[in-house]
Length: 283
Ligand SMILES: [Zn+2]
Image (cartoon, rainbow, N blue to C red; front, side, top):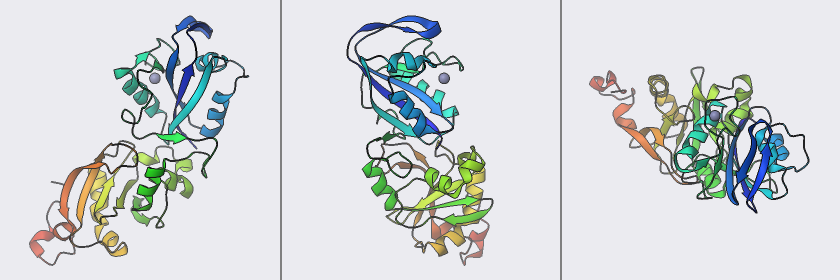
């Protein structure tokens, strides 16, 4: 599985550590967050970070191999490498970066941050907790609330102009679904290409695209081209509301949609009123 991860490392004492080409760095006792990307095997990479004895290859190895440092927890998300620096940028807004650490191949100031707060849920809600003791099917565990939320909805997506509907009662995300289908393996940018959505437990329809949960003209077009098929297959009520895009919230909580388009009744091309047939839904 491919993704972005954040190591939460605790350092039990203030100390100087020699970090490869950077040289000596004074680390204050406390917690640190390191942002990395593993576009091949995330599970294997995380295991490597947990080990004390390893060949010192990356800056982070100098810290994690020290006996005073412990990787306390790991957060992860299925995402492309481009998300790595975005994540580092988010952390840099509030947390203190260790200059030049872990960012030799990008333009960031740092990929390692001394944390003021350890709970990163609010700052980075799209990340889930990695639990090496209780691995899920992918060796990675989604938080329980997120699983319940996933189970209560019904996922769908539109790929190559075809509507796909996921099995009911599945606890995983769209990204995991696409991975199971083998689509992510075929094309790592697939999350930005497939319009995806869900029928919420309250009966409303939601759609979006990409890791940013956004609305694009293409996604709108694809969604509304398939709305008739979708509402029939999922037995969606005519009163159901249609929402596009999401504002990222906490994991396991319902996120606010960006835009409401109206009800299925008012938007469906099946509508018997001919004047409504031609209505431009993307306005
Ligand atoms: Zn970077």
